Length: 462
Ligand SMILES: Cc1cc2nc3c(=O)[nH]c(=O)nc-3n(C[C@H](O)[C@H](O)[C@H](O)COP(=O)(O)OP(=O)(O)OC[C@H]3O[C@@H](n4cnc5c(N)ncnc54)[C@H](O)[C@@H]3O)c2cc1C
Image (spheres, rainbow, N blue to C red):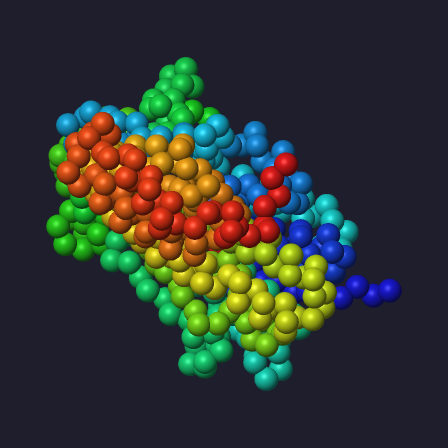
């Protein structure tokens, strides 16, 4: 019997994973990717982007049985190492239970594994250097240019999954219509990637089990460990104005800026000036849509549907959660694409908006609030309440990062209530012994329904 065909645009993390999931359901899956195969030629040469993988992402990899392939590539990070301006460091753990850690992984390595698994499936076909250049709504077709020979052809969009990233050509083809109502909001801050190599004996030059942050109020530097002993750093600055990328135009500007704000880190970055001057300036932004699907023809997925700023480390995790959810709905309504796409949007759109907001909040927390002693005290109280009332209180960061069965929207809403409560009970305290814990516990039970009543069915934990 002829298998039903699904076409996917984009072989990034989302496109590759959803392709694997749907191929397992016996669809004939075709993936069209504009770039070369990253397993053949390092498509990210000069850029060693690493990402934080958390519970939602791991859950999705577990679902398709490839978590064991990924595990050796992961570097666990147990908390934030905050580097103060005076050179002092404070370690703030992310969670308090065993396994409450996040994992640094290189984007390239992860993509290579996903594409390797995809390539081994007989009914999954990867087409590289095939650029989707536009969507033709009346004909329900995508126009594709073969970058190998310049020829043009069309593919069917019944159905089409658009996993073509934040600047999605498919989404933008609908601009000016009400179909998606996509809005792209650029942040006025950008980023550049820098690097700290391994030490002379291959050792890490900073603590390897932490995500390092140098918070400086309006801007920050962060570092994530790589398996080879090196770190990838990301410098986040305003694009213009005081302490901005505009001001870093010469070796002298860069050396003076780092000496003033990041003197300890600067000593470990041998090619500092060269990297700041020559590495590309990355843009950051949020994409929000009113809708993600065009009847049963097209569905936006991953960053194409909901790009978010990277400050909660959740863009890829959310994209992977999309794949898990879509697969669950496909299992329920096989081939009924209008129903599948509508249900997907109904279940996930509010969650994507919630994590988009929380990611923006987190920029302020990472670059500024972590420096406030009250931040550590509220974290301590949150852990105390989680210990004594685990059915009622889980810190917001933990709900987002460690609990794939708590929807983002629930984390956001409970997080607001919890934040107010933590502020209320720490306002007049300087340490935990000065907090009225009994009253705080009573307030938690009063104000927050038990967490089990709001969990979803997306978890594949063994
Ligand atoms: C600085 C930074 C740090 C980040 N850190 C984290 C983190 O720590 N944790 C986390 O979870 N997320 C993080 N993210 C977000 C994460 O990178 C994205 O959310 C994730 O990569 C989205 O995957 P995707 O497959 O939807 O899109 P992409 O990875 O962008 O993939 C889209 C694919 O489509 C292809 N494509 C595009 N247009 C076309 C076309 N016209 N025709 C054919 N193919 C096309 C592209 O070449 C690409 O392969 C970070 C992002 C940034 C910028």
